[in-house]
Image 1 (cartoon, helix red, strand yellow):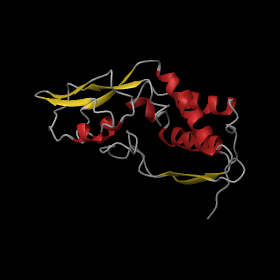
Image 2 (tube, rainbow, N blue to C red):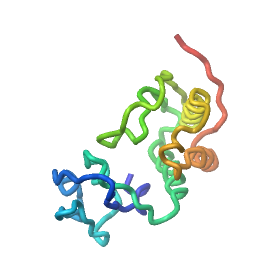
Image 3 (cartoon, helix red, strand yellow):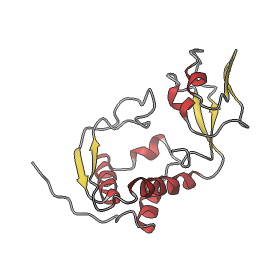
Image 4 (cartoon, helix red, strand yellow):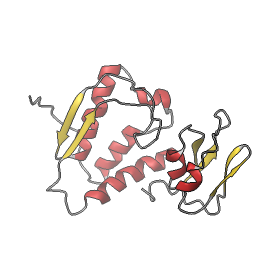
Length: 179
């Protein structure tokens, strides 16, 4: 996770009100967050980009400030996936639930209301194929990329293409319904 977020730093959102709860301060492993009258302030010399303060904030006061192109994160995500299964490639099963799909990552305290109906469970021995199948199911159900509606700088398809390029899996799949 740290390597994926290494070029990400927090930024104070001025359109949200800070509750001064201190969760961001308490969550920071580097003591790089301080609370002032207007809310959190960040010592970017100390910040390692872990994103803990972003996920800890119950009001969404902190957002990601990219220090590099978001496409870099897309590639790092694929590389992190490959590293996670290294040595277990032939003994892993990947299960995704397209249930309560929200606008924010499920690691965020207020991920938001579901954006679409539940589409069920997907399973494969290929992590890229199962993610591609889920992404395609969302596109088919919604008629467009609903993730781009809320996060225009996301590059999910680039992640999947790069994952295939580095040998994590294949973008091709066949769906088989199991009851």
